[in-house]
Image (cartoon, rainbow, N blue to C red; front, top):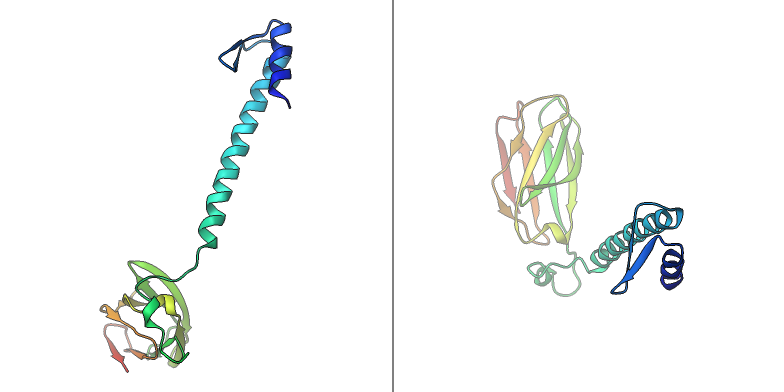
Length: 170
């Protein structure tokens, strides 16, 4: 809708007056009500477009962190590390990687078995902890902080009651 035409209609109908390029209107009349609704909708659309533009620009950035850029092995080798979890409890255990207190779920290890999880490049090169949470129990285990580098194998052994653990880095 053309703003000049809307202002002219409001001025001619006696529902508003022009002041410094913006329309002032009174709460009466169909034209002023329509204009008020239009301004509200345009404001919502502008906020929505701005939010969408910010979200798209954030997603478009590359996911390479400056402190992990030099961690890739020379010669195009594997840029991953592995976590091997030996679960000696009878319960299934969910395994998380904690980075700056933010959990990333790696997967689940069934009771009395061993599972291996790949750690991607964005999980490497900084202080991390591993968090084990049993599916049907209350006892949880959080390991000490370690730094995992590409090509390493981290081995986590959980004891029968999850009161202790053994962590090895190879």
